[in-house]
Length: 271
Image (cartoon, rainbow, N blue to C red; front, side):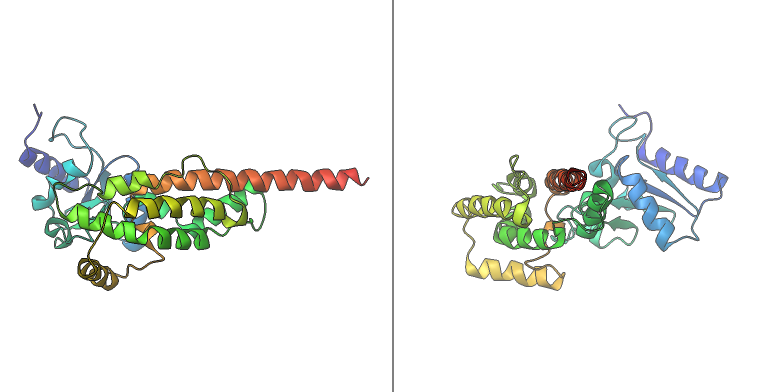
C-alpha cells in the first residue's frame, strides 16, 4: 500500500520547488541516471536551478523507481516537473505518451549505457588505463562492423516489439542474444569476435523471416530517424552493449599493459 497518493507526491514536489526557489524538479529512473541527466541539464541549461529525484514515494511503494514508475507521472509533467528516461524502443515505435510530450525527455539511443559506450570515450579510457597515447584497437570501426552484422536481426526485434504480444524476439531477446560468451581475442580489431557473432546471427535469422515489403517499411521509417547499418549499436539494449564493452575494454587494456611491460623488459634486457 502506498504511503501517498500520486497527487500528494506532486504537491510535495511543488512545495520543494517553491521553498527552495527551484525552476524545475527532474525525475529520473534510478541512481545511475542521476549523474547522466544532471550533466545534460548543467551543460544545456546552466541557468536553470534544478533538483533531481530518482525515487517515488507513491508507486508502488516508498522508494520505488524505474521507467514504469516514472511514466505514472507523465500526465502531470510540465516545465516545473520534467521526466527523463531511457528510450528503449519507444522513440522507434512512436510511443505517443513519450514522443509527443515536450516535458518527457528521452535518450534517443536505447539507454544511458549506450552513451557510456561511445567508441571515442572507450578509446580514451583504454589509453589512460594503459598509459599510452594510442591503443591497438579501433572501437569505432569495431562497432560499425558489429552494427552491420546485427542489422537484419535488429529489424526483426523492432517488428516483434511492435506486436506488443506474442513476440518471440523482442528488444530484450536481441540484447541477450548479443552476448559474446566470453570471447576475449581482440587481435585484428576483434575479427574473431565478429566472425563468431556473424555465424550466430546467420543461424538465428533462419528462425525469423520478414517479407521484403515489411522490411522495406521498417527501413524507410528508421532512415527518417537517422538509423542505418553502421549505427545500430546505439539502439541495442544498453545493459547488453555495456557488458560487451566491458569485455572489450578489459581485453584491450590487458593487451596494452602486457605490451608495455614487454617493451620495458626488452629495454632493460639490453643493458
